[in-house]
Amino acid sequence: MKKLMIAALAAALSLGASFAAQAADKVGVVVKIGGIPWFNAMEAGIKEQGTKLGLDAFMVGPTSADPALQVRAIEDLIAQQVKVIGVVPNDAKVLEPVLAKAKAAGIIVITHESPGQKGADWNFELASSKGFGEAHAKLLAEKMGGKGEYAVFVGSLTVPLHNAWADAAVAYIKANYPDMKLVGERYGVAEDVDKSRSTALDLISAHPDLKGFLAFGSQGPIGAGRAIEERRKTGEIFVLGPFSPGQGQKLIKADAISGGFMWNPKQAGEVFVTLADRLIKGESVKEGDDIPGLGVIKPVGNDIIVDQLLPINKDTVDELAGMGL
Image 1 (cartoon, one colour):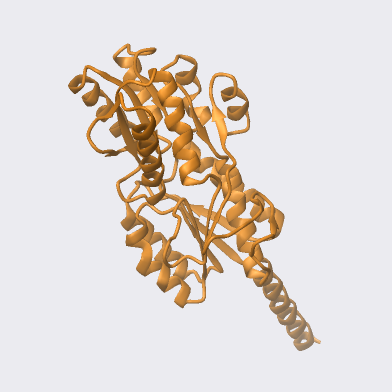
Image 2 (image 1 turned 180 degrees about the vertical axis):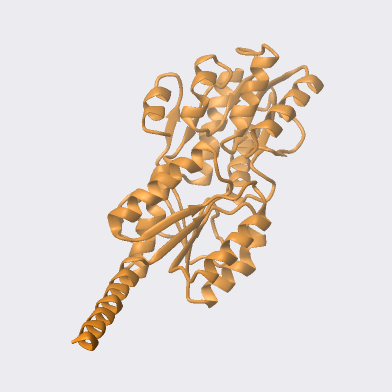
């Protein structure tokens, strides 16, 4: 009887472990940096959608926007034998070898904010590069009255999407507003609020005719906005860019930030997990598919790009912040 009970218990444990393994397909998403509002919202979307779809979905947020830390995090996920690795790259080129290693290990790779990413099965965007860049350029030109000097911040000089936005914005301004002049090239500080602030302060001191900042990276508008407040330049220098509404709520109401556009980072987190679930199950991702969070898709290569821009201004910021963004 004792032997039968032990055998039954062992069988039950084995069966339970089997069910647990089936229910615990792991999806790990490595973002640019942890602990900032944008990626906190993305993490909420990842976790909620994981629970909804029965996946063990989680986010890894490095302590700084260092590509080497992302490589290390991806190496760790490979060692964990996760089913899917998601990444929001800091440096698309640096990640190519480790993403290739993940795919060689049979792991599905999904990226975001990195069009044309080598080593990815799929990359998705909730805003087109051209549309996003030009929307900010038009708004900055409107605020500046079509003339004056402006500066451009990006998360880093190696983040493909930030630089694609900047390229589109600068090209639009050059073609349509010849009296607007770019200061320098661009500054890779917009994922660090302190560096954005200090760089903005330096530029304000060095360029008396500076009238605007285009800051592509969620901490760029916050840092530049704080610099505007410190120098008492509200209404004289205009800061535009994507940022977390909850983080920038007071600054936009004080006119230290003049506005911007964004997509919903929580929605992006959900899309990571939705795509992961489809790919794990072997379901299609092809033109005409209606995918929650993306709508009906029309992939180009391995890129899925849709335009779902949300304006951030005094009229919308409270509602967006109330959504946890």
